[in-house]
Image (cartoon, rainbow, N blue to C red; front, side, top):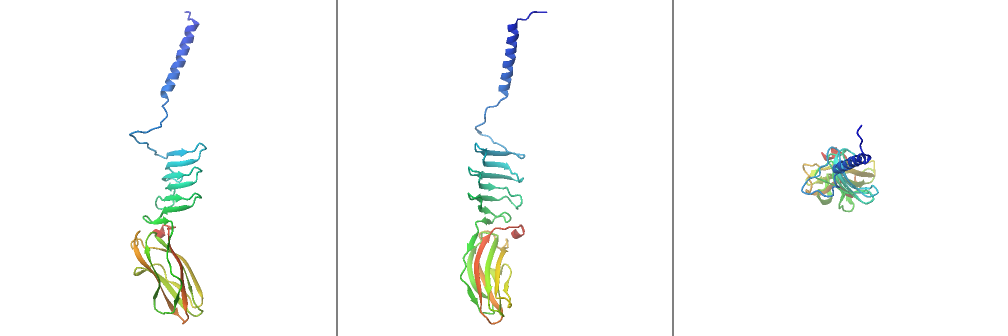
Length: 242
């Protein structure tokens, strides 16, 4: 058997170790800190996430846990600030702005594309007015610049027993919503009702008059109409968007 000096074996082992180290280091890519003249693609369920040293997410883009694709911005404590998407239950992806407490303070409408969702917008109303006429009479009037798909109507009809009355709302020349009634057997009728606007007639930004028409339908007593408030509000179902 040929004699091999021990120091030669040691040198061969050392060379093998060095080759392994060089091979491993060659496979390690340097840290990516810049992307110049190129794109970064996040797809097939991935996300790009920025987070604080403690693990709190402050930015995320990609496929959301709900299954849609969106963008999320959060404050340093993790409270949401701005989100796009995260709403597979609505008809389209919504843009939401959140307060520091988490309340959505500004958004587009989730079902009615092209309309504002929040903030809700009040429509000025005048004080209560008496109803003594048996013919339809305009009692409350104002001007609406359409922002929302739905109007929330809150009003009260009052009158003495034995006298009935009714009120309805016209936008422009057409009645929108039902006719609300006070029966002769009651002295008060409370109304708090959502009235979707016809999208074909009232796209966003449409200006129109808002008039409450009322009349006494039976009896001789004096009734009163109090329109407590009109608000433009967001839809809550897909049906309200149609």
